[in-house]
Length: 228
Image (cartoon, rainbow, N blue to C red):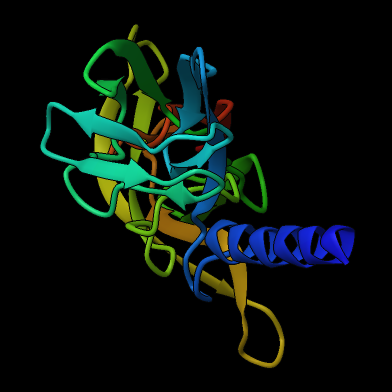
């Protein structure tokens, strides 16, 4: 009977953690667990990508207090769990905290990855003709909820033949990609830009906004030749 009660308790606890790890639909947030032990938090320094959030699980027999300088303070009972619902930023940075006012620990948030691409239907056009540059922007599955839609601006840069450096020519919003049937592709958006280069030009595109959450991303170069 004792073992049966223990198993029921364990199943209930795992169920609660599953809810924490899988928040409501529409949010890409996931949890990462830090364990409170008699000798301190494990791991003492936890590195997580932006978009994940820490959950403390108390494996000790006494209650422990987790406190951040930013204002979040929680008490975690033996066998229980806790998380900071406020006062803990999720942008890139180092966030130190203490356990019971003595054990020093920290959460290190690093930028999440993203990719951006650039292509067009052809590499050669007649002078004065229009060409549509297009591409896709994608972020990792654990990206922060501020990636709503998803929609993000990307910067298109150009380097005409004979120039030594790229210069920005437009900021374009990458908009959610829709599959047939109208559903949104998960964390995937597309962008387009019409250009009329007068001379041969090489283009690239960069995703550089909201660097507190994502790494800066740059596409490969795409060169357009112009026929006279």
